[in-house]
Length: 92
Image (cartoon, rainbow, N blue to C red):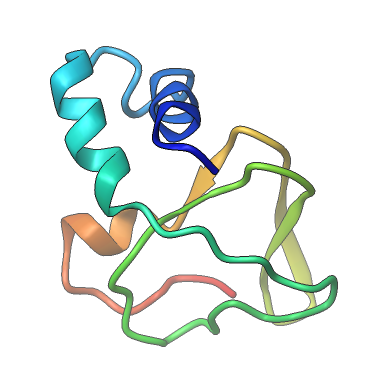
């Protein structure tokens, strides 16, 4: 993904929508693309968190054991609380 595509993704997100373009460019420059196969668990409840995720394509299920808490779709984010506090992940 090009830097400009990352900037647009950030700008269209709820959390970064009001940021200045210069700040978005800086944030986008440290964003890493990761391709995850269907059915793979990114993290488990109780894991230490150190990053947040943007869904560029596809969907993500957020759950606590067998209970599904949310189904997130393209252009949504998750895991952002791990950047704000030192608590363990609250869901898988």
